[in-house]
Image (tube, rainbow, N blue to C red):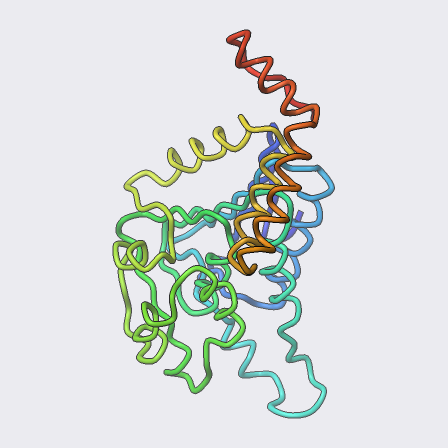
Length: 254
């Protein structure tokens, strides 16, 4: 169990909680390292869903600026963003759907962490800001997950000015998927819906969502035709269609 990040496993749902309240869950080396370890453990447990949540009034304040200011500006010092890249890639590309449960403010790198999740559920009072330009840097690494969700023109003003924006604006631009006054209830409903699907079908659907938009039309239809034929011939489809005929819940492999 980490000091700043903890993992709870319950009935196929892995809940990872950021709990570094003294610095508003800033992305310190320790927090990012522990987050990676929790993702390792969630994968080892073959979790069906991963929920990323937080304690305290902020989901994530972005980079730990105090820690960064203590690092040498040149040379081979400890400045290394690859662990953060690894965490974001695993949230984006891992087989289990990922859900960000956001009840507090999100800034800078925290928006990239949030945007790396497949589904993003935020409280209607949450505020956001991409403040990198105001401290002399660019939202470089986090632009990768953000710009896979949001057209560049929709988020250009926020990135170029650092001005804050609200939950409704974040939903309108596509940065978040759900805005609500009860984050826990919406997340629980989404987890239940994901767990109702066949495990491989859910994993393949996550892959489809990421891959198809990157393909040309002919390649997309060719790959998806092969996948559809394979799945319809598989045991999960046989069980799902039998359950439909027999008016009972399907029984999926664990």
